[in-house]
Image 1: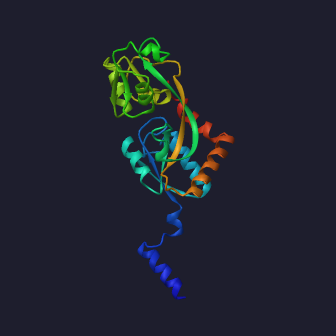
Image 2: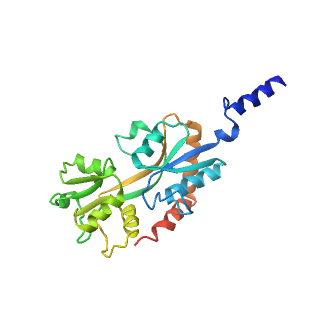
Image 3: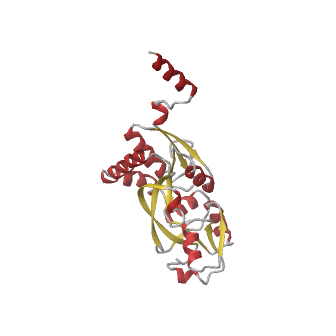
Length: 242
């Protein structure tokens, strides 16, 4: 009896994690519609919905936080219980995270207000291209010796810059650009060029995240892909884009 009393006492003090607390993950997201939109309301973004549904099927509970992108990455990197619901894999990030499962692919494109730009070579002659600092496209264009990049920290900043003519093209995931553009009352239609590359989008956690739990999430994502759940969740958002 004494050990039971002590066990309950230590749980109350927080020295021993309870079963319920060990079954909870912090979901971390940054504003990149339609993958990640907001923590308020029912429309959180399809990447959030995918991980929340996987957690529900696994019988695990989650909380949801939206943070600035760089802070979100740092939070996940140094937390044992956090999952970032959507991140592009690249060599710089590779050793920093546990890459749990790929959920889908995004088309990386140039966006313009006129004729489409369908290749890297066609974009070299532009005076200003908007890109997000540290993003997959920033890395791609920098590695290809582009010296006409204007870097910002949020997609909506580049949307405004493109609309006002301060940049001639905007490099971003097509779905995110269309969803961000749709949030503004801009009259000009947005033109997407041919895909520059297809980027795999991953659910990630820290290297200290429990491997057995990560494996359970990975298996559930595969089940959700096979039964059509992931495609349905993505379509429920992207079908609304112009």
